[in-house]
Length: 171
Image (cartoon, rainbow, N blue to C red; front, top):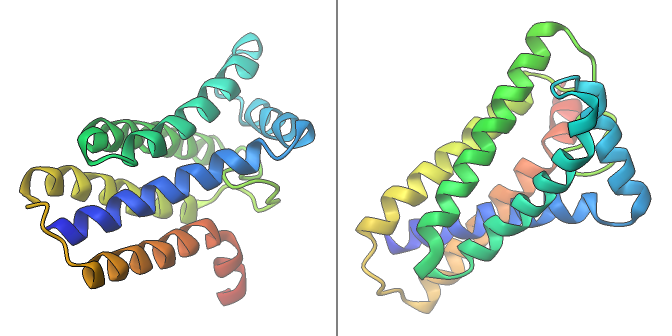
C-alpha cells in the first residue's frame, strides 16, 4: 500500500498545486478566476472575492500537507473536503442551467459540464484511497517502486488537468 499512498499523495498534490498556480500567475489570472466564481452565482456578491482567496489558500494548503507522510491524513481530508465542495457546486450550477466556464486550471473557456463532475469524483476517489492507504502503508518502499508511483501520479495529474482538452479532442 505504500506505493498507492505515494501515488495518491503526489497526484493530489500536483493537481492542487497546479490549480492554485494557474490562479496566481498574475493579477489578471486571479481577477479572471474571481469573475468566474461570480458568474457561477453560488455565493452572494460580497462573499465572492473572499471565497476566491480561501479557495486558492486551501488549494495551496493541500499539497503542503501531502508533502509529508506525517501530515498526509489531514491533507487527504482537506483535499476530499475541497473536492466534495467543488463537485457539489458544479452539480448545482449544471442543474440550474447556468453556463459558465471552468477556471479550475486557469484560462479554460470550456463550460462546466458533467466531465468536471466525473474528474472531481475520480480525484475524490484518490483522496479516499489515500486515506485508506495511510493506515495500511508500511513505510518500506524501494526506489524503483517510488519512481513508478511518481510516474503514475504524473500521468494521472496530467489527464485530470487536461481533461477539457481531452474531451474536446475525442468528441
